Image (tube, rainbow, N blue to C red; front, side):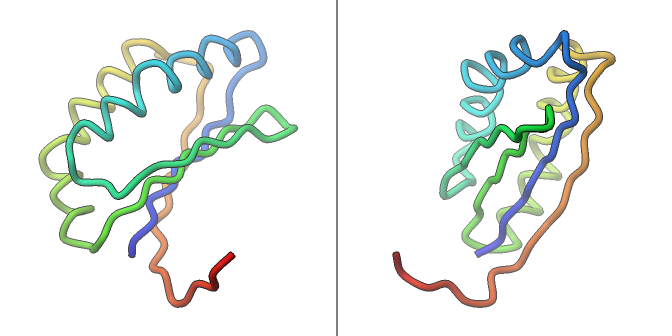
Length: 99
């Protein structure tokens, strides 16, 4: 499994709008590509948000980046041209333990 994480540092006056946009539009649009196993959305105590997307394999991630990422990033920037700083990381699952 591959995890693709996007961490957003959001200016204080935009936090509520950002959270609503992510919950009501962006994450659904990303998942609608059909390439993901699922997603998780987190809010930190410091004004940061993290979205964790899960892929079955690297090929699915590469397909998302090549086919869908540009369009979805453009929509995001149209809604938040300033006040949000993003960091993106990719993680390879080595081992997991059941709950």
